[in-house]
Amino acid sequence: VDGDTLHLRDGRKVRVMGINTPEIGHRKNDKPHYPEPLAIAAKQAAEDFFAGEGQVGLSFGEQRVDHYGRVLAHVYRADGNSLSAHILGLGFAWQVVVPPNEQGWRCLAAIETTAKKQALGIWGNKAYRAKQAKNLSINDTGFQQITGQVIAVNRSRGGWWVQLDKLAIRVRDKNLKYLDEVNPQDWLNRKLTVRGWVKNRSQSSAVKQKGYAPLMMNLQHTAMLK
Image (tube, rainbow, N blue to C red; front, top):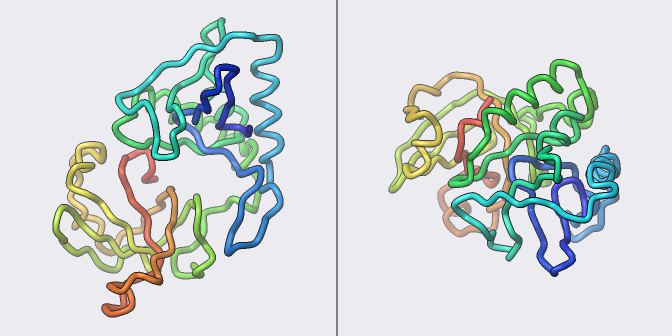
């Protein structure tokens, strides 16, 4: 389907764990968008990886299906090579970790670091430079890499809210174990770079009434914090 999604002959749709590649096609603000830069290259890299292969191996985490009904798995060829590692090594993906499925994340982080140092793929493409949190607009939704300064940290029921300029970051208590037991208060006035999926909550009554930042991201794992 694309660099991080596969269809199997038995009808299952697999979301490859550990990576996120540019989108082949998507809708934003109810308008169709053309493939994002390097999306076609990521898809081609996945197709080439499985060239001549009729079988794939799936390695499951603690959570086996996502809320879209897709199977969550690391995917391997018969020779044991990992699709996630391959795509990351070419620079066609960002590493992502969605708890509780975190197996192998340190190995994948090392592969991404090498690709980044060599400015491969997304790391050498100006379209994918981290966005400045202070310059975000309401249209900056979907998967993003964002950098900025923490201007406020507030405790809430079940977790923390971290204000990164115009972006509200939610850190749930249950995910602190995946963030090296960090105290979010230590981030105040520090510069952070985060990656993840940005949501527009501008229509929320609480946001309207209390003036909260309309854009928010869930921060769940240390791999998503750079």
